[in-house]
Image 1 (cartoon, rainbow, N blue to C red):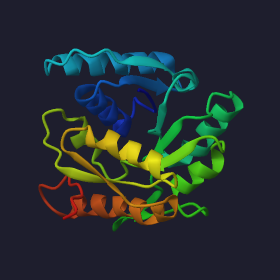
Image 2 (cartoon, rainbow, N blue to C red):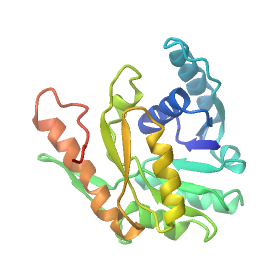
Image 3 (cartoon, rainbow, N blue to C red):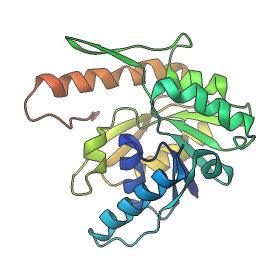
Length: 223
């Protein structure tokens, strides 16, 4: 399977690229608005994998080119850029029958911490579904993972991630993909209508990390 990570040079994109390359045999493509930035990140990720005795090639391209032949596209981009990126991909006619995964969460901060700030559609996941072509299957996943911990190949993750999608078969495919990552257990949270509850956990987790010593990279585990 060919997986394009748009925004693969950012925090969550970095972690997903490294973990997918380390733990799976799927082709990983780092995407960015700037191809040279994607190239630099891909080279850096390959070097870090080599330092862990993992020899894997990571491909790179601009976001549009990365999307063209991808089976799965991950929108590892800030929530306020989601609509613009999808609109560009639609205009370029490169987003069609792929599975489109979004881990983005709308949040706002104040002196007390971070608070869930969803769009009028109810969640970023539902916003992506509204903007994407009908032939594209949208999935919400990887929302609550600590980016620094994900990118640390020495870290024992031991966390869960929740997956939402209206298409049950595709939801299971993404669950299976998540379970390929060592230390991650992917669980179904049902259809896209449940994305609001899933996304709202992210600011809670970040606030817990803020107010408790030694919990910088805290995650979620259900039992």
